[in-house]
Image (cartoon, rainbow, N blue to C red; front, side, top):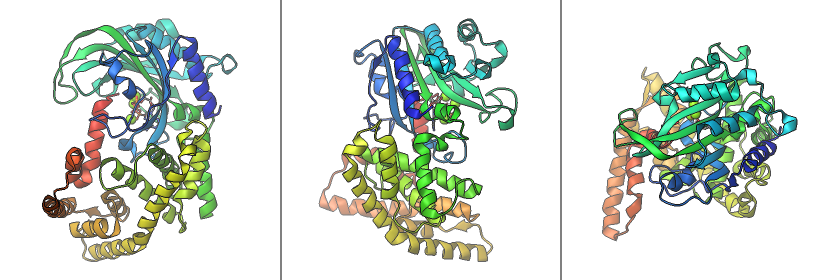
Length: 477
Ligand code: ATP
Ligand code: MG
Ligand code: MG
Ligand code: MG
């Protein structure tokens, strides 16, 4: 079943059940906790918080999502993309747990000739929050699931909150057992590769108070009107229904791999090292193009930095596959053709997208080779001295003169079996910033609202952890 059909069935299923379809929002919503929209519920937050009346009490959407905290999983697990589509259904004070479970169960298990996805009910497992006995009963009653395939999980995995005082509640996740050849028996609690998570149902039933870390906040009581928020991974369902091995090989992602095969003359499937590179390229090409499509331009801060890192990683991965010509516009064309039907902004805005990508690639290619040589020489020297840490001033030089995002240097170092003196790097970055600040103060240029992001970037190499924490805190599920 093709991705567009999976999306179509989702929408029809929920429209039939009285949901209003709401088109995907931009990846760039104004949210102090998030760089990018990372879940289907983000655009609906004001309704859940009671800050605005919803257009309808029942809504459904297929939302573009970017999760950069998952970047290190990309290509290595079978299920993590930095860009993916989350299909969801939402109830604002309308139906609750029983209907949410029933609606999801029907779509997942109804036969394909009756509008469903046709998953074998015998291979479905679910998790529920520790004390959510109500959910356990409902899974048995509504879906006929035996107790052995319902597992309890703690706060970390199965309790959701927005990261701020307000609505929160237990989750219940739906998993598909890919079979014994993919891992250990025992359900998702034991093995999340064999048991693939496809859908998360959030039962927003409580109100939480102030509190520091995830587990510390108090539960103040029950919400007067309970809400439902669910998210199904479209590419994960596609991966299972298309009989391929991972999300990167699904119809709308695989096309980029094919292009990379053509350019490199290498074959996907020949060796694992190259395969990871092919998958990274395929994923990052989608997230890169979709981000530029929504208005991000590469830069050294915040969103621009994330985009730059994704794009430079594509270029370097292509180099490692033996491709020396410019690649970004070539991959972008493929993404436009596969994703354009669902996201027309990629077609309408293509000239701009292409121009932004070309400029970024030109800039990076001008310094990539000399930077790589600097790195090789420095790495060779470190090893010759019997050491294992690349000095901070090398990382700084690569960043400052050759445009290597620190993450790229970290990645290259790790491939060479080295670490990087990140403290030294950060110190030099801070000194440089202080100099720039002193200059700017002289010229009186104001960058008021960038300070938050600047502070994140002060953290240098750990900046991604910063985003990760912010992002996962905001969608704790
Ligand atoms: P996982 O445990 O596999 O990382 P998650 O629990 O972080 O997933 P949720 O936050 O519950 O994911 O998001 C809802 C759904 O979105 C998931 O059930 C999954 O189908 C999909 N999803 C989440 N992260 C990704 C990703 N990086 N790539 C593709 N799909 C994803
Ligand atoms: Mg995750
Ligand atoms: Mg999970
Ligand atoms: Mg989940």
